[in-house]
Length: 405
Image (tube, rainbow, N blue to C red; front, top):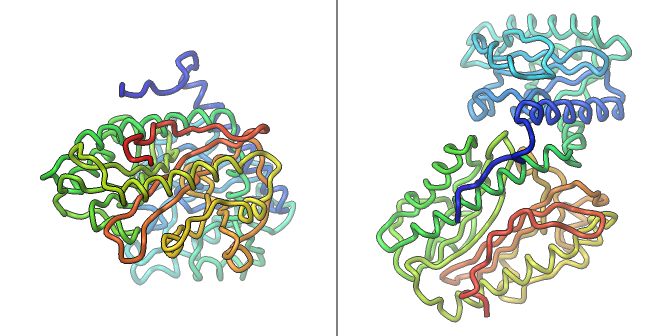
C-alpha cells in the first residue's frame, strides 16, 4: 500500500481550513440558538478544537481544565488558552480574541482555588453582560462544582453544553468529510504496515507503536485506547496492549481509536494472522461471523432510518458467541467517538435512544466474535458515511480473504 496523499490536491490548504472552521462555528451557533442560549463556554478539548480549530495540549487538558472558549451567539469567539500560548491561534479564521485562561484546579491553584474561581466567574459575567444580554442561559460542557456554584450565584442558568456540541457535530460538512477521509487513509496505511510487521517474536506493543508512528508522521494527534492484542489475549475483548510476544499463527485484533490529521478520528478494527500462517477452522469461523455481522449491519444505514429500526433489524451472532457480542451496533464519529450510540434491541429500552439518520452523518459499525472461554476473538469495524441512498464505505481496507469461510 502506498503512503496516503492527504487532502484534495485541488484544494488550497489555507482555504480549506478556513471553510472547515467557519462551517463548524456556524453549526455550533445554530445549536446554541436552538437551545435558547446566549453563549456557550466549552472546556472539553474536543469541543474547543471544534469551535476554534486550535489544538494545544489536547491530552493534558483532558484532565487539567486549563483551556476554554467563550462563543457568543451574537458576538465574538474568545479563546482562553494556557498562558504563553496566545500565538497558537494566529492561523484561526474564527478566533476573535485570545486571553490567558483563569484556572483554579488544585495543581494550579492550591489553597487559592476559591479566589481564582471568583476571578474567573467575574470575567465570564463581564463577557455575558457585554455580548450575551439576550438571556442568562449559558451552555457549558464541563465544569466542576465550585465554578458552577459561582455562576449560579450570579443568576446564570447553566445548560448542558455537551448536548449542544454533540448536535452541532452530528452532521458533517463537506470539509469535515474530507478531513475524515484523510484520517481513514492514514489509519489504513498504518494497519497495512502493522500487518506486515506481525511476525513471531515481536511484541504486541512493538506492533501497536507503528500506528502511533504513522499517525504522528502524517500530522495526527493521539490514540484514545490501547486495543491491540494477540492470541489468547484477544478473548475477551477490551484487554489492553501488552509486552506479550506474538507467536506464529496467533490471531491479532486491533481497534484503532486514532485521532488523526486535523484532529479527526479513524476508528477501524481489523484482525489478522501473525507470521503468514494458515488460519485454523475456529479462526476462520470467528472471522466469518464478525465479517457477516458488520457487513450486513452496514447495509441498514441510510438517511431516514430510525435508530430503533436499526436496532430491531440488526444482524446478531449465534450462541455461544452472542454472550460476548458488542451491545452497540454503531456509534457516531468525527473529532472522536461521538453521539449517537445505536444499541442492539435488548439494550435499547434501557440504554438506547431513538433518532433518525441524516445524510452526512458518519458512523462506525462494529462486531466482536469470540466464545466465552474460547482462545481467541475477532474484532472488525467499518467507518461509513450515511447518504440519501444508503452508505459509502470510508474504510475500504480489504478484509482478509484467507480467513473467510
